[in-house]
Image (cartoon, rainbow, N blue to C red; front, side, top):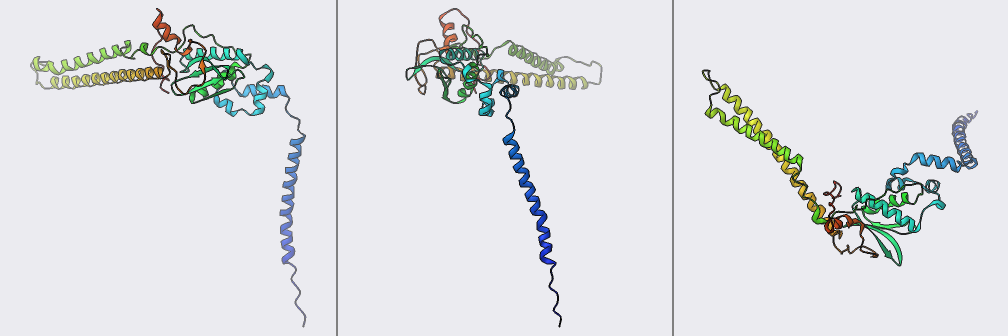
Length: 312
């Protein structure tokens, strides 16, 4: 009996199928190794070119906390030369002037003053709920939204090519007692006049058909219906305008009351300071309350009411 030949097709076929897969994996490993070697041997970007790329990527005239968080260490070192940074008393003067300008423009709600912490002179900006403390070496500590507003200011003021705006002489926050109620403006009075005219016209159209025959000799009824519809329309328009104006005036009064409360809580117009603040003020000059106090003590006109962002 002749034994059946052993089948040799199975295993060799599997070997043949595994061989291309192994070759493909080897090619991938070789490509990855080649790419890694290329990265290691690639020449780094020249410092000048990298600095230009960073300056094109970020707008340093409108540098924000989001840009600061996005920057890498390499980009920061390329954009800001440590040897050219402004520090010390000059930095504090620039930061104080810049913050005073922002307070005068109502971009920042804060009282700005010089203070001492552990025997070191600093610039302190604070509101009723948060604060930011700037030290001579450019460090910024604090809490709340005001810290996010002050950090980019310090970064800009530490650069010698940044021109600090000149703050106005009386650019602080207003005194709480001099904040207007936000009501009675010319626009409100004009709208109220229009609403009153609409209401009077509507009432007149409703009453006239009772005393005057608008269609003598005619079938009657048509003119009275027309004047009634028109009168109701005028009344509706006048009432809507009046309600909108009243709502706007009430909103202005509530916003002004909230703004005055924030000013008092921040100590504007008084010698009190929020209890969470570090350090002690160097003198009586408190930049955030300068304008309001000057308006009360002198003949200067006090600043206007609360900005739109006062309640943020």
